[in-house]
Image 1: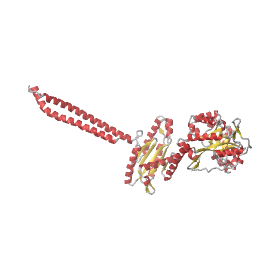
Image 2: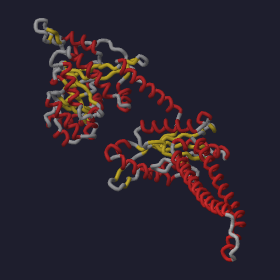
Image 3: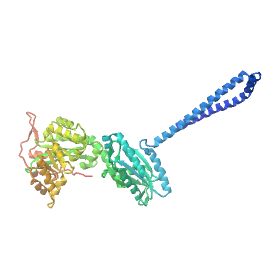
Image 4: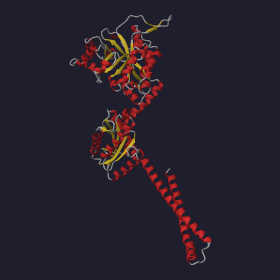
Length: 560
């Protein structure tokens, strides 16, 4: 493209010289013919002499026309070339400058980084590359609109620019991601830390916009081409510095946002493993590697098995059985949690269809799924597809979901309960739900978080929190399920608190669908089909308490 523009400029310059040549030649001819024509014309007018030759007069007039034409064309070409030069300058600026914030863009930042590196090297200085990302910027756009989001970015760039060291460059790399490159004395890394701290002090101040006031936080990753041993060749180049700063920034996000980290080699290994997990999750969804496991839920008073909670497991061909604490947060971040949950629930309804009524199936719902206004309809459609009774399904919603969109959550809960589905508030006590929410939202059950229940194993610990939750449930007429029952001490304490339902490793670890079938076959809780009417009925075998049955051997659960 630059070659075409250059050739165009040369062509215009040639045309400019031609027009100027025509005008110059016309002037020369005008002087030559005028010196002959004008004296005779004057003589003819004032002395009755012989007039000039008509041919020379016509030539003189033609020269006048040529002079006017050539000069006008020369001026027009001058103006055209000036406009083109201004357009080329603007195009070059647009190619190098972000039009919204007037910062450098990604392309020009690479050149600025290399220029600063060369200058720093000649001065025996180190270079620091800071990657700055606005936390939860998508929510600002979603809630307030992109125009407000643009205002925030413009104000943010101005605040960063005000804190820049004199040799630093600022770029907007895209979206809400900014970068700063600066030099510093390798023996005085604190200079960079001071700069980053000043950024936090300025950017975390409220954004006073025309229509709204917003609070925002940032996550920053910092990389350098020097380490404790001096120059680091592994970070030699703008691409390496940017990649390392990006890894450190992602690490800051992972650690809870609103913080900054210098790059460390271990972060690169974590990111590589993260990328492997992402690829593995995508592959696992297409190959059906995600399977439901089931944890027993027991009536604590009688010891009778009353249902199971479905837990996701990943049977990876490369990593074995992977815990949900590892892959579910990643699936939520990359937008695959809905597809994963649909696969797991489909299989769970098939598995639970072979259990005897009234054994229940509990499923956990991600906050992301509750953002879908059609979630209730999709779930009910799935129940119809598998002919699974709605009254045997219990949907568990965590307290954190109540703070995102209480109106939509209320609508979904109401729709499901109207069809007979039971709704449980999971991890109660960890999400700061209000008594008003508990009173107005139609929950059917509270689940005490395992972090509170586990404290009951210590004889010296207080059970006041669990006591309070049980009393609250009794006052609101809500049954209670206790998670994390690990030993006899916890079980005995919970039994003394009233009629509860419980689950935990004391009753066995989560089991696969086949292991659950074997367990239920032993206690006569498998549904069988009557060949005469093809209706499922319960096998008539002697009932037994869950605690009397030894759980089958389980495959090892791998936590990476």
